[in-house]
Amino acid sequence: MVKTEIGQLEKALNALVHRPWLIRRDYWASQIECLFGRPGLSVPDRQRLCALLDLLGTPVAECSVSGQP
Image 1 (cartoon, one colour):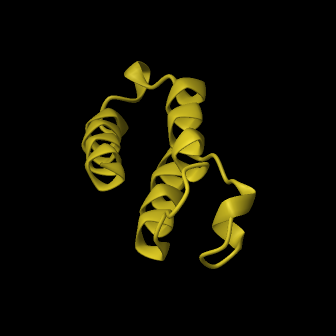
Image 2 (cartoon, helix red, strand yellow; image 1 turned 135 degrees about the vertical axis):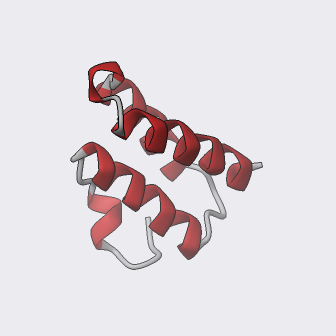
Image 3 (cartoon, rainbow, N blue to C red; image 1 turned 60 degrees about the vertical axis):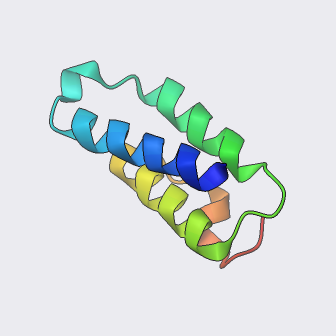
């Protein structure tokens, strides 16, 4: 389920990067940060979420810790 949600976020944000006037950074950052709170999130999934936050220019503390919340 989380992988599907991350995939949907990736698709949406990749489209929005090409249309910056549509980006509501706070909304998307909160959606991504919400996924960080889920139990059992794998290291690759954390890396994907960090990459999405990087696209938004929104660094998060979880991204600096390798695989640990």
